[in-house]
Image (cartoon, rainbow, N blue to C red; front, side, top):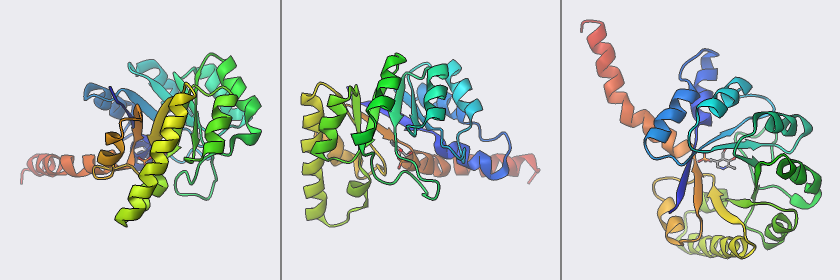
Length: 234
Ligand code: PXP
């Protein structure tokens, strides 16, 4: 069975636009779980631009599937992970000026940070490009899972380039599996590009956020407008 991790950061982005209380990502997590999500994924960024510490604390209490905390490999974040004990920590690169996570981690200097997560009894995943050297380092440094950054795949338009990138993702996924790790993929996946990737039958988990939340806006907009119309007596 392939698992779906639903990334709810964008719900928090909308809330932070008004610095208010709605929409609440905790409620979003419950709806996602009730509709088949196998995991809730959130990225607690250093600048707290969307998900807040309060969200992760509450999610730790209410999530009934699995909580996957994406975070930079910093001392502050490792301390938070140790205290909150998410089911999985996914180490990701983080730059303040980026709009979203650009590229994967270079694991070469992250052995001690990776060990700190595992020593805390938390499942460890690392977010990397589909590069054989990085997959090898993930295995050598004790990762339980590897999440492959699918951003390049998602941004391609030409059929031949998409096919070549799919082969690269297939190769990386097979390497992850033969290293005894879980093969995970995410970033930029949507209702179109997921099909060919899922059909490889290699990745056992996908973490998807932007396209699911974008679709939710439109699948809910008709009801939202008609309810307001009724309330104003129109
Ligand atoms: N996986 C990781 C490690 C990410 O950093 C992100 C983006 O926060 C995602 C998955 C989800 O990407 P998207 O929002 O493009 O689906």
